[in-house]
Length: 397
Image 1 (cartoon, helix red, strand yellow):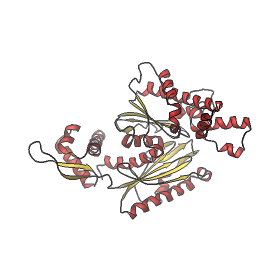
Image 2 (cartoon, rainbow, N blue to C red; image 1 turned 90 degrees about the vertical axis):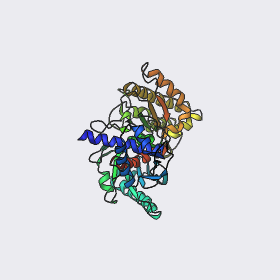
Image 3 (tube, one colour; image 1 turned 180 degrees about the horizontal axis):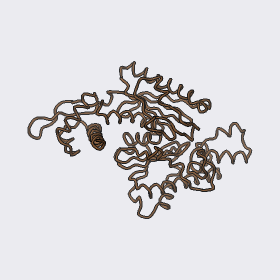
Image 4 (spheres, rainbow, N blue to C red; image 1 turned 120 degrees about the vertical axis):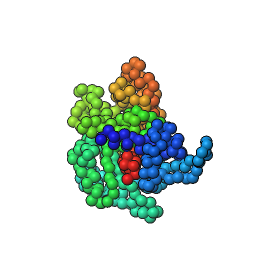
């Protein structure tokens, strides 16, 4: 029974993906491209039409016989809310079903919110309410709310089990949001939502096996195979930032030493620079605490040799980590996203050299390394896509 349901879901996803990306398209062409029978295509497309996701836009050209109905995906039938719960920034978007952002609200995260998850979620609820109000004013129904959050997520219970970035344990994010909104809500690890967004609407649209790396304040990753997110037995797959690269290295927020995140993340880069600035005694402590990874890249451009050393070491560690992922997973695409990629023109060549140096010979010879197309909205767009994906899997019901 489970295998039958999985097959039905896969068939629905294949059909809607063709209509979404190749439309207008007729049923006979969908049958040829998917290998499904015409009666199966009729049943699936009728379900999508009834759900308001697909419509007929008239007759197409005939190659003999009756002219076929041409079907297209209704990109603005519903709006969806996507939420990215970040350590430094909250991002809430209202998007249509083509991944276009209609409205966006962003706010800086306060220390009080980090210490008190309830306060954080109250702030998010206000931002979501503003998007819902806008959608109501223009007469667009909301399909649901998708949430991306750093850390381990229990997919069944929809609980943030652990987040090193926040220091949170067992926070019932979805349950608390449901106190405010009578809408479907889905939550997933933010690295996975980022990968899902890039697969549906960004750099990974034409690839089947993607390793997506989020290189920002922290480091995480997600694996997509044939469009499906790999979550692992306990839901903790993709903790790329917690691979140990130096057994006696710096202490990581997760409690271990020498993690990739403690060596190469934006937070690690900034920490190392602050330590050097303290030794130089060249600025006020308050100003020093505001130094972030972006500033270290600026110092490097200005000729600061110690800043340059910090950056090159961070890039080298990332290259070693990516080479290891190629050896282990053999993806056909690696997508790099996150705040550190804003400075890719500085380090890309060295990163590629490091990957080539450390990957196993003949491994990953055809892998494409590229950068995400969705920028700082990737995780929020992917979170919204969770809701769209769930609707499609249910045949629009």
